[in-house]
Length: 461
Image 1 (cartoon, rainbow, N blue to C red):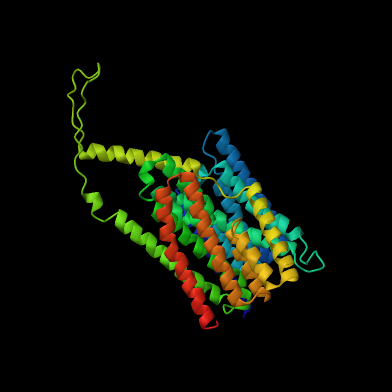
Image 2: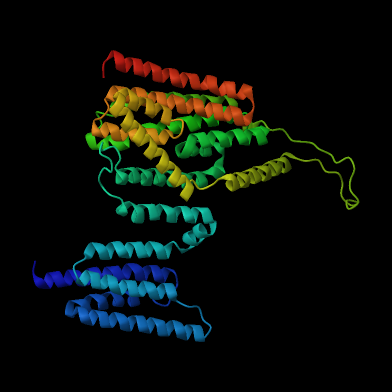
């Protein structure tokens, strides 16, 4: 490319970066706008093209000028322009990046800065809603990902080559990240009711969700009618999570190895989802909300402060306002009971569980072959179904277990998780009739899995 054309492209790109950020500042009604930011970007590009040392000098001068302007504003008791000053300095650096042929870095940085500047209200609102536990959870996720993981050895630490600490910790990072993302979704959509909470909570931890739903029903009898459908939604989410984790961690070897597991679990998920939908349709018909009648209630004995007030009947509008108030109180109560799934204890507990399962499965495979490994997978699902699913996916990738036994093991582990959830709900809620109904609704899900396992055996997949 001709040198003149290359220089013209750099000048145009630098001006575009400055205009992008300057337009955002203009829309925010700041004094430094389109022209200021465009000139700052061009100044960085031109100074770098002339001499990197000159670019450094002009950047220091720009920082000093911005500092003096803010000090003058502070002395005049005016609003400081710290964010705009930093954005202006960053725009100058982006101009230097274009001068050094880093076009992608410059444009990506410009877009990121523009997003941060334009999302001021949203970010402030989000930071106000964050709890101390959530901030600690995000920091913990960053710590285990970028500090602990690089320090671990990337090779087996035992003579049987069973345990690779970096592989184990990578699994901890991935599952922890999934839990944290699901928690964020649960917190966002939890305001819309227990259905979203049950579905998203099943992705995080179905056993914990069963405990929560059982306690919710014991404290609030109004949730009794929704309990079966919510438990089925949590079970549906658990099954979805299990086969997705198996598929995700066995992808390096293609879909063929994990396909029998998916074939066995997907019908179970569909049956559970259909049963939940049927329960919702039967308990909450579309016309039920339209058949509310006015509630007439007359105060028998007016108080001493009501001499000029007649005893007024409560209309449907007043009743609906009371119901909305009760619902808002219930949602606030759910928010207070919701806890971030990421803490040092939870991460350490999952790491220990997964490490123990890895050691036991490896020892079982060495001592008893594939049968010992599959027994560990099924038994381990009672402690952590996600750990069993991840471990099974990794063993499929290594070719240490065949596809059909893996499908059977994951089916049995899923059944163990479903029955464990029913048992937890039964124990916490202490309502045998509701627990029995949930168990009966769970049986078709198990039967569908049995049918698929039998078909896989008949066709010798």
